[in-house]
Length: 64
Image (cartoon, helix red, strand yellow):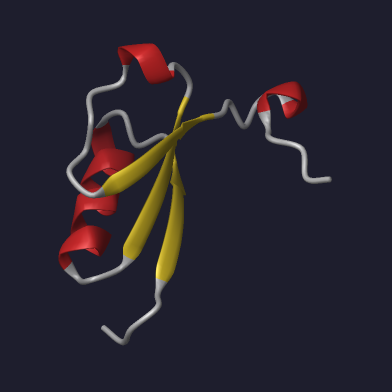
């Protein structure tokens, strides 16, 4: 995979989201993943985690 590929995956704390995050990381992508509870999330090697619940607008970071 070419340089400078970045991927954002929602729901990386388990299942398909977690597997996808690790697969993209293995292919050389920079991976960002969201979890609903950052304190309860297990770290994923090389994946930048952020707390966000896409079901609720207020949980999404605001850009100024």
